[in-house]
Length: 289
Image (cartoon, rainbow, N blue to C red; front, side):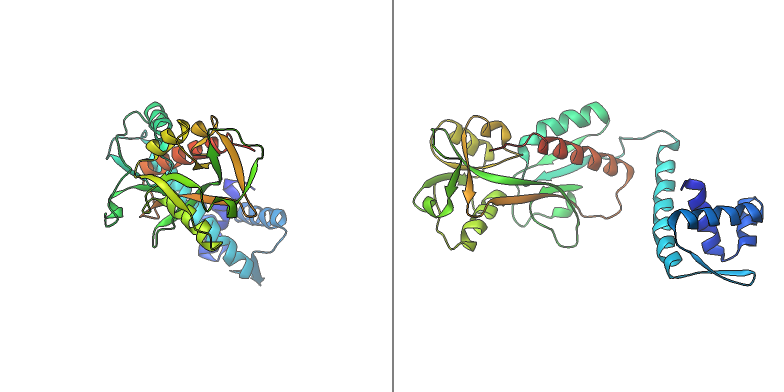
């Protein structure tokens, strides 16, 4: 199957006629017929019902046509985007990091190298009533209603502390009297932690709370107390700690890349690709027990 097959099929499907399609494509009717037969043979399914000299899309053909149309339209947009040279300075890109702030330096460096004309506005700590539509992208663990939401990574969350511990697992029920270092209740990581313990009907206490993830990581690294360590996004501090897996149920979270628009412009599409690649690359290095 190649692009010619798909374009020929698209024209035949829209015209419901081999003759008209051949005229529009400036090729012979036999060439069009042969191409359609090759496509059907490769798919091992008939796409048209043939009645005499007329053809009509059947159920399989209509379904396939919907995908082919979307694919060709997207491809044409891509060709149009690069045909005159990629322009990457139309507008700044705004990104809100509700999670994953440790990857910001990598992201900025990557975009600076690959898209040097793009300017970035990066936000981390915003009020709950902030208008999210001002951001081109939001990196978060929540599915924002009416936004385009794409999962980028899934990561386990360990318990971590500086001192030695004989086991690599810890019962969640034994942590009810531990005084943790953590983020405030508005933070997405804290919400994941609270939800985990609420579902098991277990209380949890935080002795030190802050709205800055870097401060939490620093306090845990200094041996001040115990914290929760996401395996991908907190892997740098996690490498210096003793980590234990929560049992009998592990704690996990999914990080999403959200956008208020479904159809990204060319610059947004490139930025989206860079963000996804960085998160996927980070997942390959996630902490293991």
